[in-house]
Image 1 (tube, rainbow, N blue to C red):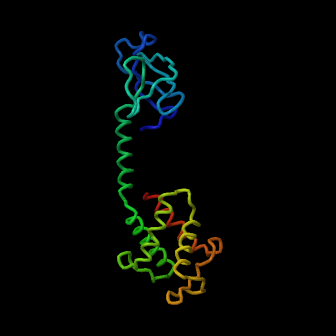
Image 2 (cartoon, rainbow, N blue to C red; image 1 turned 90 degrees about the horizontal axis):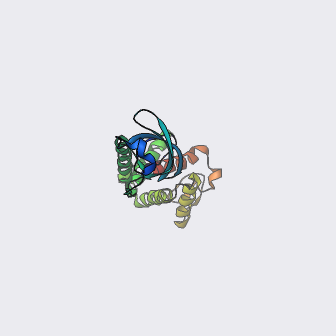
Length: 209
């Protein structure tokens, strides 16, 4: 469905008695949307073949699921507008083809590149990542894919909850043996470069879901 907005051009089909003069020899006329009542109801400024202007109010706008009336006037989108809308829908479908595992992989690799930029080369490629790390990334993807309104702090809170459930506590240096991690603190207490990871993670998920 194409959202109508003021100023867009549509085709107007005159069919009722009030359009007798306008409709002579004209199956379709150019019209400009002047007001939007809903996705299927608009006001129009209509022009006949000579450029004479007529106003029409509460005109039915045909969308994909709107039945074409047997009588009465209506307007519709032009072919090129429908083609552009179809291309946009196809592009959205391509993005939607990314499943959550693939999004998690992208998030992991982006985070790995960011860590390397900070001098941390301890992150391994997705294919070599342990299952707990993949599961953590997937849970983060689920969080933001299902709720785009959740902020970056939600990612950190989710990560902390997973770590705590696995026995991790705060420690000044990351130590997998002791299960200590310096990021086991509230989001607001994280260094800016660590907060950035959650901003990046959320941004990638929203862009691909």
